Amino acid sequence: MKNKSLISINDYSPEDYYRILELAEAFEKNPNQNLLEKHVIASLFFEPSTRTRLSFESAISRLGGRIVGFSEASSTSVSKGESLADTIKTVSQYSDLIIMRHPIEGSARYASEVASVPIINAGDGANQHPTQCLLDLYSIKKTQGTLENLNIFLVGDLKYGRTVHSLLMAMSNFNPTFNFISPENLKMPEEYKHFLDKKGIKYYEHEEFTDIISEADIMYVTRVQKERFSDPMEYEKVKNAYVLKREMLINTKPNMKILHPLPRVNEIDTNVDEDPRAYYFQQALNGVYTRMAIMSLILGIK
Ligand code: CP
Image (cartoon, rainbow, N blue to C red; front, side, top):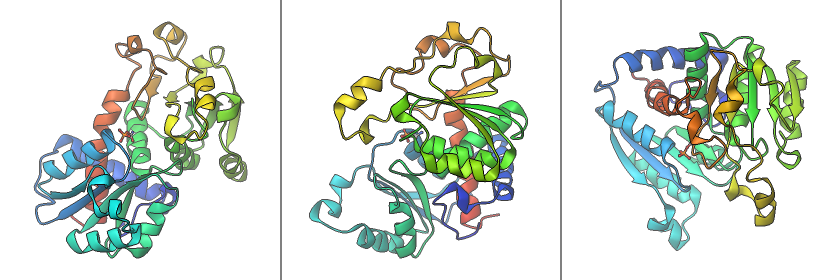
């Protein structure tokens, strides 16, 4: 992993995932260490973010590193017409590692080809969000005790939700059964279903889930990604497609956990937050430990 960019979850092997999860566990036990003392890390967010940006910044600060960067491109020379390549080549001169979120699919891979330091993809359009995926794996392993043989429900916007695309690919290494629950026009794209077919992984598609909810080990709920719709009327039709309420959880497994990458709009009622199955805020905290582990391994810090 040393000096290797993290662009897609498939850039890393299942052995790499376990290595990251093990180190994240160590950071959870002892999060305040000066391991990044001599490092400058760039955080370039061309798209809005709360958790990804701030959990990276929290992780860097707790490890004694320095951060340079921006949270909106309008305050940079991108607004004067500077290209992504020139921005990345320049920031490579100022930092040891670049974390980048960008709205265009493939932009992170492109950035890694022009950068002279490793790139961590913090989300590129509807494509991939590998660090979210690794914190999701950490949350699943921590709550279920294993990544193997789990029944994973993916609920909501499976078309544009980059977190479900990364999670599907990663979990496909651990013999899951997937249940995809979405409106017809937000179904899991064919390419991901072909990917599962090739690996012989079982998946089922539904528009409702109340009659099968008792089978779930993990229910991974996603927001309808308003910003990816070209037609606002199409968003209006599906924005309230699923709202998880506490009374719907009566027949679920006691150790079932509800995950959500957040932000939430209305797809999980706030009355679910008090339920022991709600895990999304702890999941957000797990992002700090997981990102500490990812950066340390990429920077080759022992
Ligand atoms: N989960 C996630 O990516 O959240 P942000 O958009 O707030 O970073």
